[in-house]
Amino acid sequence: MTTSNQERKSPNGQLGSKDESTCGKNQKVRTKMQQNNGEIQQIVRDILDYGDLLLIANKGIGKTNSLMVLAKAFRDQENTRVIIFEDFPKWCNEFDTIPFFKVKDSDVVETSHTVDIEDYFIRHERDYTVRRGSEIQQTLESNKDLIFVSEITDIERQAFFIYSIVQHFYRKHYLRAYKNYEKSERVIFVIEESQNVFDSSTISKKIFNRLRKIFSVARNLDLHFVLASQRLQDLNTKIRGRTRLMLGQVNIDDYELKIRRLLRHSKHRQDILTLQRGVFLYPSTDQLISFSKHTQNGKPFEIKPKPRPQPQVEKPKSLFRLFKEIFTKPKPTFQPSVYNEEEDLDTEIEEDGLIGEELFEEEW
Image (spheres, rainbow, N blue to C red):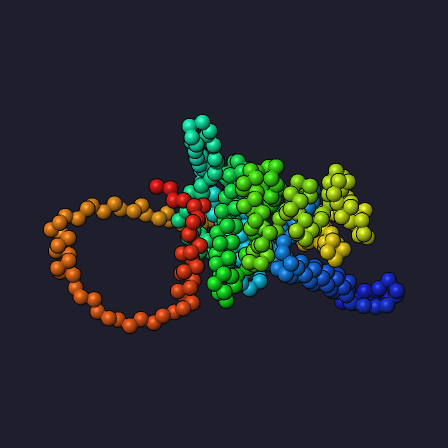
């Protein structure tokens, strides 16, 4: 018995198209992709509704890829900005079309204050200053989403830089809430190696407490953190206890000390040590979620805003010139203007947001 090129025998002896198996496979792939997209969208909604996410997994299990998939989903949300911090040039090469700003090692400097009290006690206070203030300000104002690629070699200075950016948005959103401003904007901070930022044993207690204060009220101001680390116990309890978890394959040490007790009621408590790359347990729903490989759409590009020009020192005016300006000054004419309350409030918020801030200092 012969069959045409378009037909073949199926295993049960029935004739069918040879494209049926291919169509079946494609349908399964589409179904799986739709299921994965639905699970990812659920995680995105949970973060926006309830706060923050902490992703824990060993090295090489796909944390960065998973963060890229989540970041892409956040960028598709309305009125949502994504700010990414990295200290290794991976996002700036492999993520989608997005501007990135390179932070040099010299951009964050230590400032010391020595206070002499009654000639017998000296207190040394250490803090940091972020330079290139006008360039950073321009970058934040002119770009919705952004990657900060850090070349800072010191963990504490890197933590202070992240704090300075978070504080910028915190102050802005705080003033909006204080003035009951209707305009809303959600900001997602994506931080890899978050143990270098949210652990008081790694950075100074002063910087940690500043970050902790913002973190504790961030959700109320539409600020959200998506964090990643290799070990759960490396992050401070005050931070990890307030986030939703997503767990990939973890090491036995972290499992015995922390994770086993957290998953004592989970049906996947034993699987957590052998999960495949890209598969994570979401304890909130006790589901295993597979992240497909991120497909790059476009390419990131570096932005280099122009620094603010140095102020010109004006020479003192002579007495003759002052008298001349007084007697030759034209009379003012009345010109009616249209008042735009929304633009005025925007400007007021931007100005108020800089009151008392010394995080971004211009380098002259």
